[in-house]
Image 1 (cartoon, helix red, strand yellow):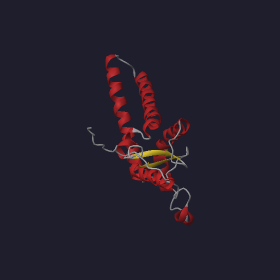
Image 2 (spheres, rainbow, N blue to C red):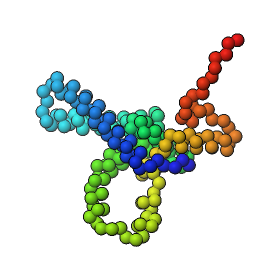
Image 3 (spheres, one colour):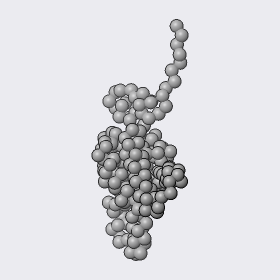
Length: 181
């Protein structure tokens, strides 16, 4: 099984996703509301609706199509299903999206709460399941680096005695010289 990607890469991908989503929605909202003079309530509803729709399209639909959201594509991260490293299905991706939608905004609060709670107990320092948890979330998917996924697929194919085309493993398609003849 490919190992999970590091937290820095994951958080950068989340940050890129948020930035791209806000940028696109901001541009859409600016162009839509400039033509029509709308109130604050109508603007807020339009903003939340567009952010939710674009977030769903990015995190669920794009991930179904190419195994990564826009930010993850930029950072070279792919999303796989556990335990077989297959393509995650729609239900898992929706659960993952909902989990991220409600989990991510609470992280500053959890961080502040942990900081004021004092030092962790000794048993938590050594091997807390949460601290040693893999990069799987509640939906049973893992985020892995693209090259690790490619290497894993090639190793599984060699073990089974099959050859994997580089383009099927996520790499560039092989160059085939044109034969004249």
